[in-house]
Image (tube, rainbow, N blue to C red; front, side):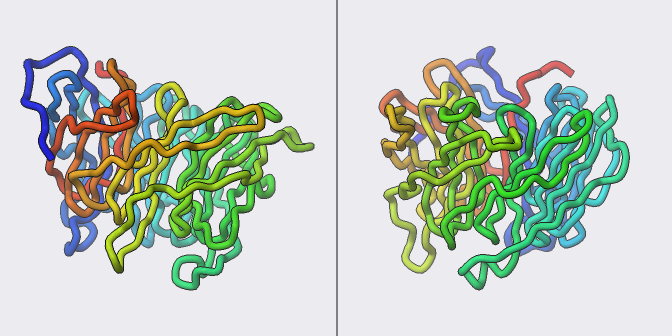
Length: 376
């Protein structure tokens, strides 16, 4: 795989924050942390990569809506959640609290609260915030329940992903272990959550991991996509508003997450899913084959369907997460290659194929978040 030669610096520079895992073969707490990297899209290069904070297993990070606070999970058996004020390219510690479970793997920041998915314990935690973005009050921990047919991976609940519904009235928690998406109503001034039943039940053995909403969530029009880590499928969900006034869904179709087979004895494991900036394309990272698959999102009179366009081969190995950057000339995907310790950028062409843009080596990146505000 070749990369374009570097060009003079441009004004299209994107600031990226990265969570990382321990380097394979090393113990947690031996140097991994949060990194800051710039991507010069026009020049096709990464610049200024440096580790900003040393903290154990910060596998996922999230920016507050005003992008002035960064929240970082500590994915360990005694899970933690830390807050940092963003001051230019520096992070100022604001506090650390328990995550409410074991091995927190995903975090989302809302204006009045932070939501955390704890994988091993299967719990979902809400942590209230004050006006400055610091933690305020006691966390609320919601237990998960259930299991699935995969005895090795679905022996109990495994909360893996958290997302707000498009109307902001509820939080959906994707449970890989129980093949369900749980639903929680946002309460008070947005600082609390309360159980509100199951949003959708997936086929047994799906192992749902990450989810993205499509069109606005109105009855008869909305849809969402969820990737199954265990069944290697992208599931299309049709949204509806139930009698409680909250969104629910039903699976209506499923397609293979990619057409490229994984190595013999390894298999194929989708990780992250996201839409293009205009919503017309769906991207899915798949570990094993080590590709990002590209689908067209086609609206038919009867609903939505996915048409596979390409599997983009990656330079890196085990793509755990990626960010979609809205750039002139088409989307740019920035992919975290966990096992290869690589960060790579790909430009998506109009025909759905991709071309390499930039490549960087750094220790075991696990997630990529863009900060759109570059000033302090």
